[in-house]
Image (cartoon, rainbow, N blue to C red; front, side):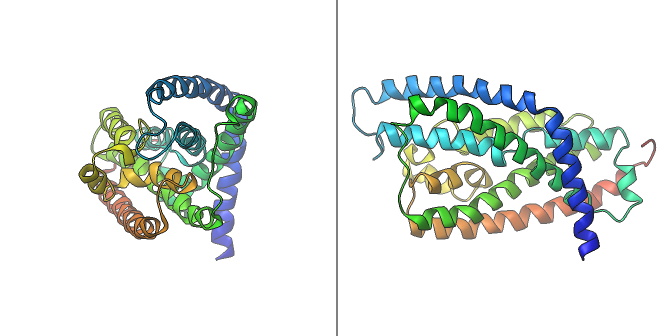
Length: 269
């Protein structure tokens, strides 16, 4: 068991080192995200100009939600893991994993965790730089239970996001180019994942339907817990559904892997 864990510890360390090489890329991307926050500040400031609250939340609570989502994107979001997996399949680099006692999913997930630690740590730099301007608007709940429940929500959210990216990467066994699938998924994720606007502002029927989709649990759900936009009963219910999606996506990953290997021709690598 320890030997198995040690393999993925080394994969994690290699991923950490390789991502630190590109730390400036993550830092620049983080500072450019401040422009996104500026746009959010201006647009929602205009929306709240004629009202003290929208959907039961004031301007400070809404801005806090978007700041939280920005940070979560760098800590648990899947950036280009799908393309990396696709590239390894197309170039035959995946062949080396077929000859060694290494689980490819666990290997890629170890690298994913390492990358998110680097990008997540670097996003804190521009966030700290913006605190003198945003600090007075940020309002987080004082209920410690929300932060405890956010831990499993964040963990499963990361698994869901990586699993979806992994699934798209596996499609390379059947399709030469997966870009169309990834772009479509990103568009749906932005809309139904609460990145464009908080999902609780949608009509009640659409909001209830969204709760049964995996996109709901990628960003909105952990972000809503951390900012107090949803209550404890809904959090417990959401964690149960989130767990179901994690298990379903893990099973789908293994199915695509096994079926894909039947089509794979091991040349190169």
